[in-house]
Length: 307
Image (cartoon, rainbow, N blue to C red; front, side):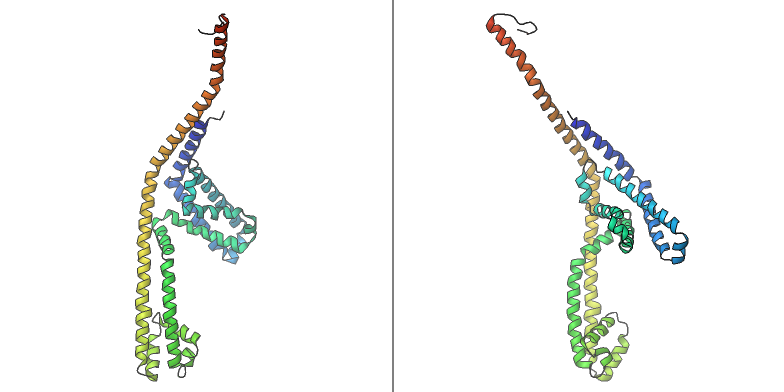
């Protein structure tokens, strides 16, 4: 019979030991150092002379990085041995697992371009060890829906003003407003206020009313829309900070929850073991009682049976 209590306690001990290693500051600094080393190796490989002279050394260092990342993932998976679902609930864990395991996929290992892109993705893992950087990345992701709306409104404004510019200035300035595409490119560059003075002076030479065109465009495209985008990003940044704070609080409370889950699992295992023992003992108790009852009916005492 399998001892479920021993299995559960064994997983708990393994998880506790791996968690002690993975949460140690030395472990985090070592992994961060390997990530930075991986980034430095990729930078060295961009110099053809160095990569050719030290090809074997660079290949060996890359294998050591892969080995270090693999050991790290094994330790972190072991830290969740008693609660494997919790590992996959963290998006950063899933991202790290995909990036590290991709080094062992045959098709990806043979494709140099994809392999370099995946090695570049390892640099993003520094966000795990830098909370502020992690907050910024989460904020960028949460701001994407608002940014999409911003792009739609910006494209609409750019289209309307490009058409007005083409109608008004195409005959006088075909180089900048000769078509819808040229007008759109000109106004897109003016969105950064670069060359605005020259554009206004050229427009004033055509018509004094061109100042209204440029002033309204700069007001909408360079001030209103940019401020709206900044507001969207700041709102997403605040949401990311609140999410990070909630996850940190949940992580602090997690050990207590793990202890409660472990105790409940042990209680269930003990109940199952008691039920199995009772099921095995039941036939052994029923047989002597049946024999004793038969002896009573015959009027003969049965040796070894308590009356």
